[in-house]
Length: 592
Image (cartoon, rainbow, N blue to C red):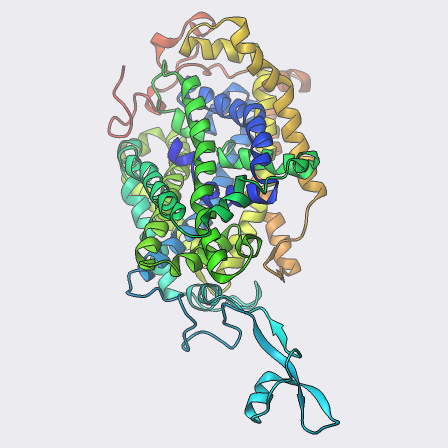
């Protein structure tokens, strides 16, 4: 779960958000939003999955009316899985490119750089004098070609493009002019994407049993690299300046009055913890029934947030050094997302002694950060298949898992064309936004308001033991009131603040935006469709049918008979082959 929750966003988004929203002051709303929105949702999902031993679709036996919410989660996970492995492919490409005596983006190469490639501003125009009374402005290249000299102080400077920026656009991506210009498949990115899927398939071919071992490395190794980068960064000149902008003297507590800061904190917590994607339900469904999911939720959430804060020191110390040696302010070199991971940070690493070594460490860290999140996303898909076709999955887990990886590889090829980065940005903009918020809101409303918060607490106590009323006071307050209101506020704010997607300064065509809306519509349309289907299949008049769909199914409850007490004594027994706790012994644990 730590591997799933701690991902690329902890490294390339949180540090920038902190810097941009008041530095150390941002940690206040961040921690508050963790307590009010992140933890309650995380604990809820872990408890649901562990109690029922079911995946994100089948778990809605708890409330058949909302079965479509589980389908929405899985579909969004599929879309995100397609482009997330492309980002892993980028990391693989840069990892391989770093195995050179000199990093290829350390200087402007004549094989790919143009006249704008420069680490410092360069002269584009200046005034020249061809006679005593005649002065005019001319292009610098024309001035040089005619052996003339610029008049001192008349030079017009233009900011150059960093070598790392041109390398990213012209070499790594071979980026086209926009979504309209698909271009060809970039063959080396396609091979890196294939390698990424082979790694994922190899780690998951035995399900949880194999990926659970691999993730011990992929989840822990990033912490080793972050520690090394923090230590190295702290020894560099100018590092203190970068840290000052991160959470030091430059912190601006006046920013706490800005609603945008609180919205950014809530959004970052929500997406960072990976709630409402279906992965937490899928992973926790393999837990023993009496596992302490409460302590799991606390440990994973706190670890995730501390990792984000710690990563900021690794990022800003080295960016501070880069600003120092280039004579710029930290504000001029700080980036977020792709620009941080593949332009700003590689640029900084290229200027360090032993740059290739540090670059190899950094991109291997990005690779492992991405892989363990990807493992859980694929496990979400395979867990859903196991719930639907338990006997088939028991016999053919490896072929089905590898088949899923192969299909997703082919679907991802559009993202490694010359227009690939535009597709990655488009899917991320639409699928990883509103759909997840809608699923989360309906999830908490369905479980707490319709199924019943008190009944759900009784279910949790069957697993972790009875607790005093004071223990549940905070969780009741969040689940019933605070968390739903916060999530609805974020959704409304996001709708109001909606902007057409663009990559850098390049806008998307109308058909691209329409396609984005179609993708997210396809994901969430199953919520009303499945509600209507379940109502039609129920018996009685329309009100009786709706009431039936708002009650748990007869086979809702703990899977193992020995765990069924109280109101679950007469539970309708399901086929035990679907039980994650006892089925597919090669995949999960043996029976208790």
